[in-house]
Every structure is written in structure tokens, then in C-alpha cells.
Length: 387
Ligand SMILES: *[C@@H]1O[C@H](CO)[C@@H](O)[C@H](O)[C@H]1NC(C)=O
Image (cartoon, rainbow, N blue to C red; front, side, top):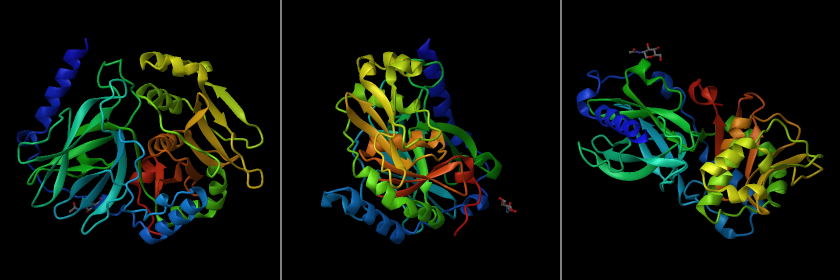
């Protein structure tokens, strides 16, 4: 019984977003969070990106300023940038931006989400509304229009993954709690932030595709050291955009079953999609079974012997739809490789990925002109060293 489940979630959500149920206390203490803000070196990043683009791409269209570039090969999945300001603590969400530092606002993190409904991967609407004095945004789940109660509708996206017992939808997604408080109504939205311990209430979950934060200077330098090696690999990889919804779904599913530990650059391995049972099952759910027999995950398909840098490439019908370049023979966290592959699918570019030698549970990557750090709780919610 799908409908009652969705309705009850819908009811609970619309109750949660009214001012009446907001906590009566309006003071929050976000000292711990403000201590974590990354000072992104825009100038150093732009130089790194210009070097990479010059080496990898022929077209001068890529040689643009990294910050103003709206990097989005896919129009169906877009990046949303979340920024924070103080007095009072509040957040703003910017659509189709990969960094959103501006006067008074500091980038917290970036998430990507479906902006078109996909009945199998993202089927529930979510709206973003804004209000002024002071400027702020509010995300409301299971609503496609945010107009009303003092909010102005800005954009609609679709919740990734299933809700409740809806088994026709993929359950694979990233998620973050949306915390709210009143006087004025505003939200806190940051991965792993325990808003309830800092005066926020009404926690609700948003499911989306990928997330990362801007890299610190230390992290940026780790990627920079490997950059020429990544360039040599990625120069040889050409990604194509999925021609239809079925291909997009099957590539998304193939990403979820990539079993990475380390890639041996001397031993190319082709893992056939039809041998991966979860992939076969999901293809049947997602109406893309006709693509299974031509699907494969290819390790070390593109290798530069001299440097030992190599690739992971996802192939359907002899075309590459997502890829990462990485150092061979180095343990790389599987989970963040999946996120980087999703960003490759979204941006149409092979993503250079470097393991952080100091913090093994995170990777530093170049995502269409932005130096991005992917990771878990340590990456987002421990004090981030400024240097
Ligand atoms: C705010 O929280 C920090 C720790 O996150 C704590 O050290 C500080 O005392 C708190 N301030 C107030 C006013 O509660």
C-alpha cells in the first residue's frame, strides 16, 4: 500500500513546516559549525583549474574562470550551493552553483539533485523558498511550490531515493537533516550537524544525489601534486552523455556496484554488468534491462605506465558514461569513488581523484572547475584545519 505511506509522510511534513510547531526558542549556538568553515582559495583554485583544462581539453570554452562557470552537462541533475551567514544564523541555497562565497555568505557545502522527476530515482518533489530581512532560504520536502507563509518559491527539485515502503524507487541516496527554528523562521542544513544539540528543532531529512565541500588549501595542494598525472590519463578519456533516461538510470545503478579497493594499473579488468546480481535486479526495476549485456565496469582501461596513474570507466555499448582517474595500487575509499563517478556522469567529464594521505577517509577531486573534498563525518563535522 504505497499511497497511505506517502500521504502520512506528506501530512507529517506539512505539519512540521508550519510556524506553529517551530520551537519557541529562537536562539541557536552554532559556534562549533562556524569553526569549520573552509577558507577556499579561489585564486589558487582558478590557477589549478586553468592548468588542468589547458592540458586536457581542446576547446577554449573550458578555459573560463572556475567560479563563474556553471558546470552542468546534465540539465536534469544540478548542483545546489548552501551558504551560511550569522546574526541570526541562517542558510541560503543557490541553484546551479558550485561555490557561493559572497558578501557576508560563506559556502557550507554543495549537493546535487534531480531537477526533473524520475519515477525510479527521484520521484517526490521538494521546493526551495526564500525570504528577506534577513535573506534566507527554506527547503520544504514533499511540496513542489514554496509560496506562502511569508516564503517566495524559488525552485523545485526531486527527493532522491525511496520514502517509506515505496519499493519501486531506488533507495540509494545521500541525505542531510534540515533543522529549523523561528523568530525569524530559518533553517540549518549541513551534513552531520546535530542541530538539536545547538538549539534547532523540527529535523527532517532531504535525500539527494551527491555532496562535497570546497577543499582547504592543504587538500588543494594534494590534488595539485598529482595533477599532471591525472591530466595524462584524462586527456585520453572521452565521456558521452546518456542518450535517454534508461541509459542514465543504468549508469547510476552501475556506479553503485563498483567494487573499488585498489586498481592494479598493470592488470586491466573488465567486470561484466550481467555478473553483478544487484545491477541485473535494479535494471529490471528501472526498465533498462536491455542494456545489461553491454554494460561493464573497466579497471585500468586507460593507464599511463610511467606514472602508474590509471582509470575506472563505466561502459555501455562501447561508450564511456562515467570515469575517474586515480593513482594505481592505492587503497581508495569505495564510497566516495561512487560519488565522484556520479559527478562524472553529471558533468560529462572524467574526474581526477586523489586520496588524502593525512585523512584516509576522504578524497580530493576536481569537479568541473571546483576543487572538491568528498568524505564522511570527519570531513564535514570535525574542526577543519585552516592551513
Ligand atoms: C556554544 O557552544 C560552544 C561549543 O560548541 C560552547 O563552548 C559555548 O560555551 C556555547 N555558548 C553558549 C552561549 O551556550
